Length: 182
Image (cartoon, rainbow, N blue to C red; front, side, top):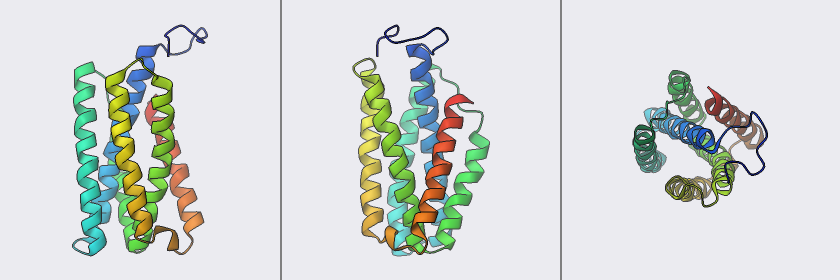
């Protein structure tokens, strides 16, 4: 990811790109924490609630690491954090109200988008920013484990799974696009 190779006038610099990556990834981890908070508020102590709580703890750890990186590199957060605060919780609560499998379907849909997103970022970074790339790959591995666990809990058995999954994936991609830029 040479700062000049393949760049056109007006393209973001390497520093701009890494700042955007950190900003969007921190926003994504914040959104994940809020989704799980909404699900946990509905599902509570049920077995799936315990699974969600464990996943939420990992997401909170990811968020702490991205918060620290933002502070260290003086990257501003997305201006959309208040939106993600409400929207994440609402998505989590709504899917949990649809049932435990729907809550798991939400996890699968979000994690599929995040897997693509983190994979693209890691590839784009190459060897240019090992600290950021390692964090992205660490988080990606956890996200894939969350997806596998949610699938094992019957996520794809949710009535209307393709529609629910498609809507959540579309919203996740929009959130990524917006948080990268705003």
